[in-house]
Amino acid sequence: MSGKVAIGSDIGQARRAAEQLRVEAGIDRVKVSKAAADLLQFCMEQTKSDPFLVGLPAATNPFKEKKTCAIL
Image (cartoon, rainbow, N blue to C red; front, side):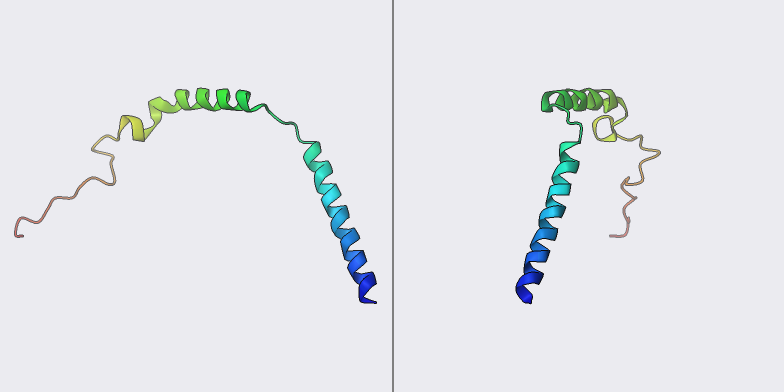
């Protein structure tokens, strides 16, 4: 009896794997060179507004150093 259950689960796993492969085969793929070029273009367009590259104005910087205690 347990042999039939094992065979049935193997068939179910095989069907799920085949369905997953069908789904993946239907995905429209982009070449790596095209994706890399698009990513580079996007990064270059965003450099003007990137706070890591241009910095934050001191008035709007939430991480600005607080005044230190004069007693210590």
